[in-house]
Length: 563
Image (cartoon, rainbow, N blue to C red; front, side, top):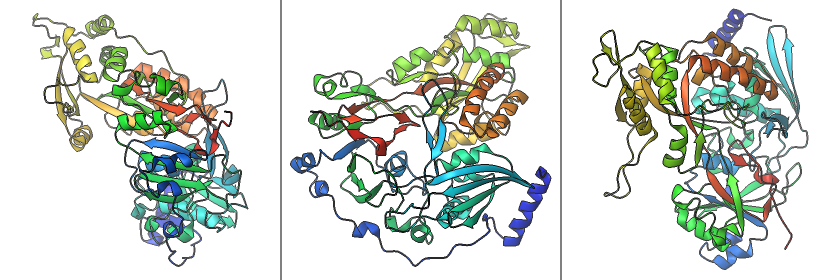
């Protein structure tokens, strides 16, 4: 195995030779002439000719799945800063990855890889490094009939790796890829800088684009041409209409048409669902849950749908500033978080208590530890043991003449919808009140997102309210590892994170999650508050519904044909 120093030297030589920061392209692709817009050629949806004509919409209900979209999906492009909804609409439907990342088998907590565009893949140790060799399915075509080849794979991966393309949300996932090389028309090789299982995980998230459409511009004039089981018919009037791709290379989906309907008003969406115009309402707002979900018109036709993506709200500690440089103090503060009350009172039950970013289907998909109870008495004992007492009886703990006064930064308090309404009680309010009762003063400073980010970077805080969201089974080194300058140093956490990065099988990473949780319990690098657990609705006529990684597998859905 080549040493790390040698690998870096080789990379530096290559970058010097090409004279830019672009990724190495071993075999260049050819440029195709600019294509015409498929959107202009696509037929219009009958149901979209007049959205207000409810009769026409219902006439298509027998073959059309309708999904409520609660936010503007924006540009429907899988690489150009996709929104949550643009990804839900296009990923796995219009576009496909090389491999699939499937939900765990019954009784397991970790997912598993399966073929998609790639027929097979192999991790190979060769003189000088590690390679991932991929063999493509030979019969895959794009929706315009052009075959998918290794050139399309090379183009997509290199476009992501090129900083000039601006695919910032995916590029870090391929940081360990040195080069993408063509072997044959249906074989490609990824040369790695170091063994990194996260590259394989990335291949399950990256949609493969046709080079002949997107080479000139990743925006491609708004075109959507992929290899998936659906293709775009239209995007107008707040409705994105997909129809079954007759050229699809594998098993065609059971549902012929899918419409994603943008409706920002939740009350109107519920009314439309009750009227039979929607099949999936992914998330109900607290004001309409659970009463509206159990209303007769809804309960008779719908069942509950829980789309809980890997999102953790947590309290971050600056371990470089005293007294938070002590794990004992961090542990004490973690016990002052009343997670159950926060989940119930602040989030109306649409979140659940969580301690670490580890749970089945979480950022680390593994067994979840028991969430500790709210325990101010135990927290006070830890502070006593650390030498913090209220020596002058003013209600504030002190040590060596220093008051236990901490600075907490966070986002500005949201403005009430009605001027006369009282301010909403936030998670930090419960925490601050509990801390004050045992002699800890917490000063809150708030600002916008950039203001908070600036203070975190500078380290000018003791505590910070944060959120972490992403995909199931991801590299948490940026969150938990030593590269974050404010994190508590932990060789044990670093070893576990390195072992996860070297584990090619997700099941092995799931086993390591137990060790990671134990290491976090020693250092209290952070303290989780709640994990989002949104509640939605799915019509009883829809079957094969399974949630994974924050969404449902739309092509796997079918309609129950029973009367």
